[in-house]
Amino acid sequence: SGLKCHMSLPVTVGALLVGLPYSISLAAQWIYGWPNKPGYKKYIEALKPRIYCLTRAVLETLKYLQYGRLYFQWKSWYKNDENRKHYEKAITFGRRGNKLDLYHPPNMEKKEDAPAPLVVFIYGGAWGSGERSIYCLLARQMAEELGAAVVCPDYCTYPKGNVLGMVQDIADCLVWAQESGQKFNFDKDNIVLIGHSAGAHLCALTTLFLIDTREELFIEASKQRDITQATKGVILSGVYNIMDHYEHEQKRAVEYVSTMHKAMNGVENFPYYSPTHLLEKLSQDKLNVPPFALLHGTTDIIVPVESSTKFSELLNSLSVKVSLYLLPRVDHTEIVTDLMASDRRFYHPIYSCIKQEF
Image 1 (cartoon, rainbow, N blue to C red):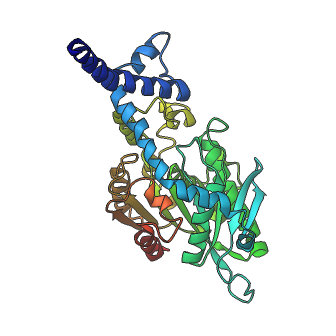
Image 2 (image 1 turned 90 degrees about the vertical axis):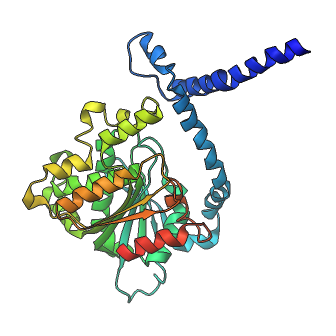
Image 3 (image 1 turned 30 degrees about the horizontal axis):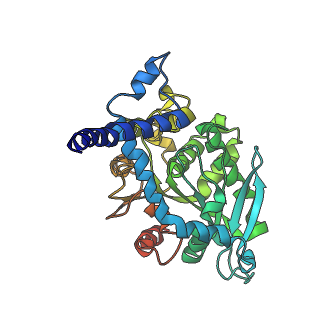
């Protein structure tokens, strides 16, 4: 009995401290991609002691179980016939035939009213996941709270597309908005972009590409200028300096399983896809940038709060109007999930920030 006790304790400790974390991390590497190293070196890299950081990052995803009730709410929302009056679903737009959903503002039946402003909401998902229907509750609440029409488009996530393709898709959505305002009774010249996480990065990047009238968007320069003039503000919570974020991923040991560097075709393209880098390179005559509002939870460990504070400092240094809201006790997920239902803990504090800017 004593011998078994003496043997079982180290075995148990070994299983918990070595076997479990290595098993979890190896599974994550196998599912999401091994380090880009030749031959056996990728396995050695994946088994370094920092694997404990990766295990922690994987286990942190278990907290998403707390959003089970929201999951069943949005799954059933479209099935409720009463809600059909609030939206137009699966409208085709853009060069790749993507779909968007349009949510009507309150009192839209009053045709004599002036067209409502338009919010374009871009969801996140680490550039490799996400789907517009998940955000039906958010879009509906946003339409009510802001008195605006709200569009939520899909875009080509990795591996179907890279970040340039994602920016093109969002730009295509804005072209659609310019062409469809009269049909759906929203103000095509009064657009606000709102994005979360990777979606915030894509909003900022698309805005700057349009300001710079980039040829790689394959959109006429005149249309790009029209969209730029119609964009009255950008409200964000996410990533703006890709190299900084990659270093943060390295500290968490998730850089190999992350979609980010793959979606950007490698580390060498990080400057090209960094809003901070683009801002620094814009000529003075093109610094006609719409106002930015940056929201960030102080307990966000996925995207550190420095992402927003540094971006705010850069915008200020370039005399671009920017507001910074640091929200105590709010984490990376809550800043978007808590916009989905009025009984969520941070619903009112977050919307009060958005309304102040909107």
